[in-house]
Length: 66
Image (cartoon, rainbow, N blue to C red; front, side):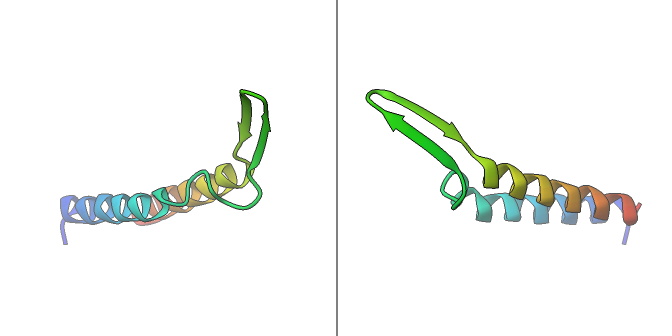
């Protein structure tokens, strides 16, 4: 398989995973939400961790198969 074919497959897998996990973003247990009156403070702790792990794995595999 050529380099372009591998790149297209990688991009397809990444888009699939992003689309699948997009529905869960912002609704994970562990995300902090404070509501008081008309003010809302939102801090997505677990969402940030999940995104960080996924991106780390993606970049690891991209560098490994180069």
